[in-house]
Image (tube, one colour):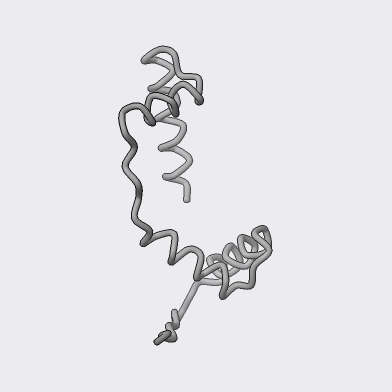
Length: 81
């Protein structure tokens, strides 16, 4: 049976960011929140070594320096959220 959840005292800037994200995904605010919740608890599939190798090739990494730059950029993007 579905359960109703509520979040109290959401800061205005967070609510606005959620509304914007919902609009970008063509969803209601409720639909966007549900998508975020579902995504956050989804089982993450572990890659096989072959799948990982193919992903690395697709990204185009060739040297350890490029890998390090890629990791730093990804980390920086995620730390700004």
